[in-house]
Length: 384
Ligand code: GLA
Image (cartoon, rainbow, N blue to C red; front, side, top):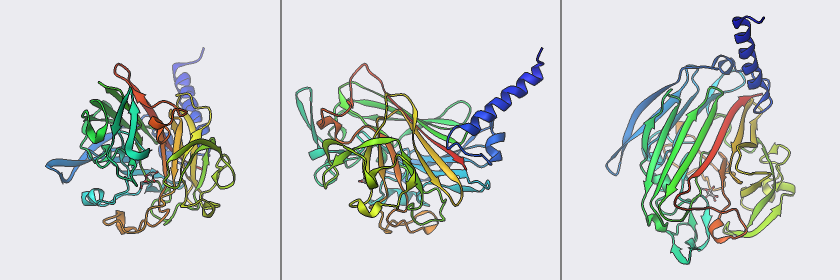
């Protein structure tokens, strides 16, 4: 007979063992993670200003070991993501600003934002659906990028704390016709910080008219936590044999090209290794292998000097790898006045393929009344 105590201890060891073998397959030296199997979370609030008459608040979900996720009700913007390195040193791994005015500046390149109604580009800012032609707000060389001129990243979201204080639910009602899109759309996004140092994002939405929908998060990662000015030495793996080939304006040609040479991240390599051979740097949607809507590990980012490792898990068919090509050092009120120059951070945006509403060969992105959109993406932090 096994005593209850022995059984409990066995369960604890099992959970701990599982923590060690998942993620980056690392030797996890972070004692905070080990102890935090059942940590107490808390959520704090900090008013940071007003925008168009609305009060803007920064919410912080944290555990007692200092791991924290901060976000705003403006755009659902992730402002801080604080995780340990291999020595237990905490650091902020996302780019951002020190004040609300930073996030409101015109050329803020979607730092940490929820992007919608349609993340990425829609060619000529138009599409046809059920016999109607819809004209969208054009904001990128005549195309529509990231939902148009005033996308979900610039909207005020309602925030509700969820039980347990490790999650918050953000909701937004997008009106019929907003930025040219059809249908009243109710969107909800749940942000969770888990005991395993994962940032989990669960999106869902319903509509009263058929509409294209493609939601993502636009956080810029730099795992050095402010030490390295570029991500070129970060090592990246993406589980994709193909990517959606694009023209010079980054609009898909419809062709799924094989990854070759610089585009091939099937085996982990430094982002900077062959970036010079990619015109403009990486800004490509990778066609993830074997995606069938089930949450699975699709990419890993690793920064060797401090051992921080980030796995990306998603239910989505695509992953936009953007190497921060348009960062040019001109953003103001950046965190600790850092100069965010070209390749200062990178985005791994889990999503459907760009321009899907005009590309019959791509997976469908039309949400119809009576159906519920859902997508889950997890950024899981470990060390090795
Ligand atoms: C996306 C796009 C890029 C760029 C950034 C924002 O990742 O693919 O081309 O527009 O957003 O600067």
